[in-house]
Amino acid sequence: MNGLIKPLNELAGFVSLKDAINKKKTPVMAAGVMDSQKAHLAAGLSEAMGAPVLFVAASELKAKEVFSDLRFFYKNKALLFPSKDIIFYGADVRSAEILKRRFETLGALLSGEKYAVCCSVEALFDRLSPAGAFKNAILKIETGQNLPIDKLAERLVFIGYERADAVEGAGQFALRGGILDVCAPIDNAA
Image (cartoon, rainbow, N blue to C red; front, top):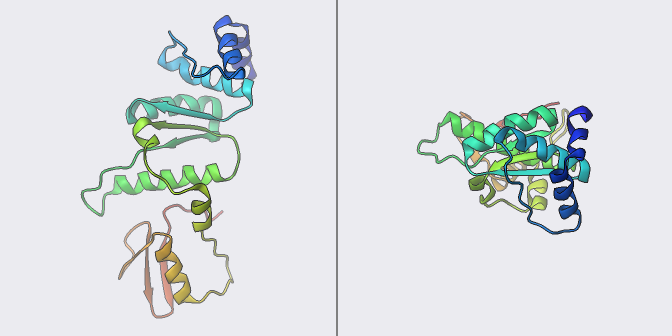
């Protein structure tokens, strides 16, 4: 990767961008950069500054395009934070996938590792819980752990799960006697 980033340091425009950011003379503008070069520029600045990347695109479509480019430079350290989908029907498969991706991105960011996150302006304006509240809502249950089932059901409702007669999708749980069925928004069984 260094072979793609190092040559940027020989470009006067890149050096002046880097200097302006270091001197806190922001925001900065990089004119004449083609769409396919934006991810390269972001990766170069991120490498030079030792900082993560938040790439905000004008639309959801542009965010997906940039995310595809960022994945080239960041591999599994590139994340897409999609905007919320307008749900007209409760069983919207696309909305479930969007919810899953949003949770995966937020969960990854809680790890403290440096990521390149790409989102649309619309996604940037989505209201989110504070990071601490989100982190405290994560429920980890391990094999062999004994938990009072009624308290666990209360906790699931508190953190946003929907109680149902039968689990049909992510974010739902059902309690039948001593059996608790749960379908998490994301699967972190690793």
